[in-house]
Image (tube, rainbow, N blue to C red; front, side, top):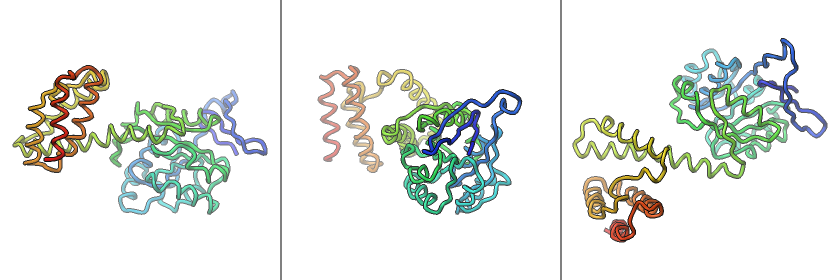
Length: 322
């Protein structure tokens, strides 16, 4: 069976190997064939990816989702696309986006294969950061062409997500013979492919969670503390500061560190811990953990003088026992 995305992905030979070839010249071959696209798991991510593919000329034909929120997202991003059972999505689509939570993905791939829903030559692409293509093993053995296409972006479940895909990096893992297919799909969605080895996926995903998910927690907690301190518009106060800090960190790494920990101001840090214990005891452990990590990196980078680090680390150690 042939599936074409800018070029053709052909399953040939008795061993079921995949080959990527350039399309033939001529009017019919110059424009790649469009794919029918299905979404299994109409959460925040799947409909946005399908909508981006629709802008590139592909045709969303079916989606599955069990909640009212799934229906609303499908209606907003994929108008006219019916919500059907997962097996029916696979029956209708050349390319199926498996956009379910990470922990549900292994069972979904196994279940689709066991029920015979997978068609040989069908592209199955998941959007999980944690997994590469091995998680799709049961479906691959049933003849599917596996891709791992993880958009490095936070999603809202609204049309703005499609715009945010422009220039967005995708963590991509694919068999060698499908690398061009994976690259083309990412580019058609407006993204930039970044190749991640199968065995590196968990570390890659941990890095993104550390940077993005924990950032949201830190910012929300900082706004909460500012409100407690009487600041009327903490978002307006933090916006320029955090924007500059992020820009500096992306440009300079640890060299961008500033503040009392990097300076070794042990007295200031001790005052912080005292005030947090008084007004926001739930924030103390996080503050101490981040301060210790910051101190370690500042010391290793030569920003924190060793003679100041001792008193600072003592304060951070004492903070756990008070």
